[in-house]
Length: 349
Image 1 (cartoon, rainbow, N blue to C red):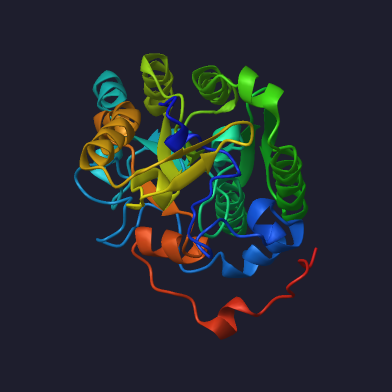
Image 2 (cartoon, rainbow, N blue to C red):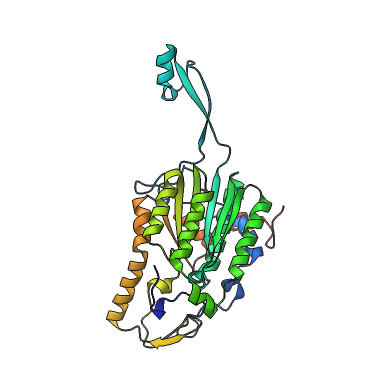
């Protein structure tokens, strides 16, 4: 899902010749801040990942798989009692014994939720507000806090171009803080480095992440992919199929508007941190070719999501992450007073 065209090279120094439209110089827009990730705990409201979703949620509808929620554990086999649900009847045992029996199940008290958090070089890009890598970290924090508050176990697979870090699924606020600290480490390792660019293999790193998820995820879990999907190929589709056999999967696609729509300019300067080119994007044929290349990059990713009924949530680098997530899940906004109930520099542990 990558292209060699410099106009789509996803790294930190993509600049236009129009002053004021270049990427933000605010450090928090380039690298994530742990205090900000902690503060997001108080914004992780007004949405959920439970089966009961609003009608306009990206997680509902006939084209996506309905979330099942927590799984069921077999408790016992016992005689039928008046009022029991006949759908739980064990007809084989009933026929063999001559007496009606039912199977009793109890809902699992908690489930495993794994976040796959992309911190590769393709994510180290942002044309207007924040880097995609920062947006991914903030989105992961929002989801992690919400999952933790719901009582489920939260884990993560954090990956860059060279490594894949597994955080086992556990409960508790301190565990979430530890998880986010690992995200911060990977985020702060991102830099414009010539050797890092040369050694990056998007498909290899993406598929390594998916293979790891297949190993660590249990049945009846929820897996949330957070990243730009670069490197998705046929092998990735096979891994996705395996994941969907036993788990629910949600894909959050992080993108920057400049990646999808180039502004029409007579003189555009683009750099990947190593090389720099200047060109005109006013040409109609150039714009059409660019749009076609972008569509080609996303085609296999989007098709796999449709085939396996995986909800695809689009998150851009401009609007606040919490607002985008609530809107995508069909929930209302949270009042300012509700969002400001906690400290801005940390959480109570």
